[in-house]
Image 1 (cartoon, rainbow, N blue to C red):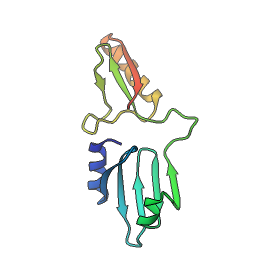
Image 2 (image 1 turned 30 degrees about the vertical axis):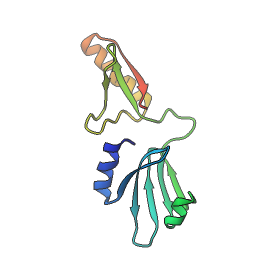
Image 3 (image 1 turned 180 degrees about the vertical axis):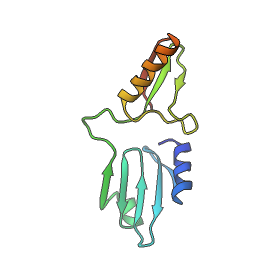
Length: 121
């Protein structure tokens, strides 16, 4: 998750966006029962409290992809190296490689230009 995406999610959820050292941007939401919910690119994780978050001892995790899929964020790149996002405002790409390839093929059929896809860093 990049900073723009984290700030939007922070605003929507009423949480706090911050950059976790070595892991990128996350958003945490404090629940009324003291639990902390953390949102990342990898998934959503619940912690019982601040100490559990600091110790990385989660109670529940919902992953957004598996080791066997191509999940991630994919962007389209033109022959000049320009990157095209699914959503330019948040600088996010397509969730699946196949979706990005489909969009790239559509662009090629409309313009005749060559496009490739790559995983968004």
